Structures are given as C-alpha cells and as structure tokens.
Length: 208
Image 1 (tube, rainbow, N blue to C red):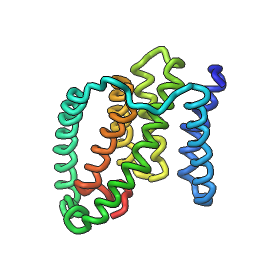
Image 2: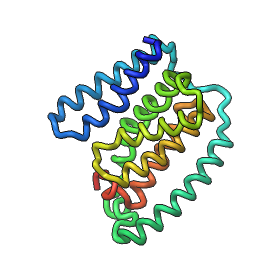
Image 3: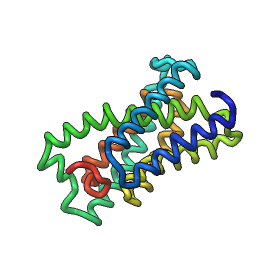
C-alpha cells in the first residue's frame, strides 16, 4: 500500500475519478455510498497505514496564526464585498439580515460536516500520504489546490472552481506551515462562512 504505483492509483481514484464522477447525473444514493466508502478508506489508511493519530499539534503559534488569518480575511472581505456590491447589490448580507436562523444553521452544519472532513482529506491525509512523492514543494501545493477545486466540480459553477482553487492554495500553505488540521479548519471555516455571509451564497450554490 506504500508503493509509488499504489499511491498514484490511489490519488487518481480518490481525488480525480471520484470527484469528476459526482458531476455526472446518476443516483444520489450511489454518490453518497461512494463518498462514504472513500472517506472510511481514508480514515483507515490514516490510522492503520500512516499511523496518524488525531491530536492537536503542541506549541501552536496562535498569535501568528490569528494575525496572518486576520490580514488575509480583511483582504478577502474587502474584495468580496466590492464584488457583491457591483454584481448583485441586492444580495449583500441578504441572508444575515432576512434569514438569520438559516445563516446560523448553515454555518454550524458547514463547520462540522463540510470544513473539517475536507481538511482531514485534502490536507491531513493528502500531505501525510503523498508529499514524499513530489520533489518540488511548490508544485505539490499547487497540485493540492487543483485537486481541491476539482472536488467542487459537481457545482458546475466556474466561480466556485476559481474560489476553491484560490482557497486551496491558502489552506495548503497554512497546513504546510502549521501541520495543524485544527488551524487550517478554522481558517477554512472563517473564509467559507464569510462568503455565505457577504451574500455570495446564491452565486456559489449555497442554500439561500
């Protein structure tokens, strides 16, 4: 299970074939089944093959993380607010103002059932399992971001693909620097929730 060939096939099946298949019209129960089986396989490999344990990395530099995340968030907030203002002004903060319960409910579900599983798969598992296959670290991070955006193909939305690629780059750099699933999940949750908050939910296929 640790040979280069095996890992290459694993990448192709889990991170390319499976996500692309979700963009095609077939039974939802089959998609859910494939997704669940794939995720359980990832957990098994993490625990039994890679000997990974779920723990919080000690001595995290929380101050540096929050400073860097705040700077990036302010830039993202400014750009996305202007984008919504000029492209769909009526949607600016529409969900927060008119449907606060939906906003709270979606945010909680998003954090628990979307953000953490994604980071566990695309950062913790991917970095632990495949980083040694790549000689060039920059290409590895770029490739990780490409695959992360590919996972969102089922939205069939070019804006989603672009944003998830950019987000994938940010998250890949954060995880590469911190080695912390917790920190990168917090960052992911903040940016993703903001996009829903600022009014980009409809554009990105979120429930509004």
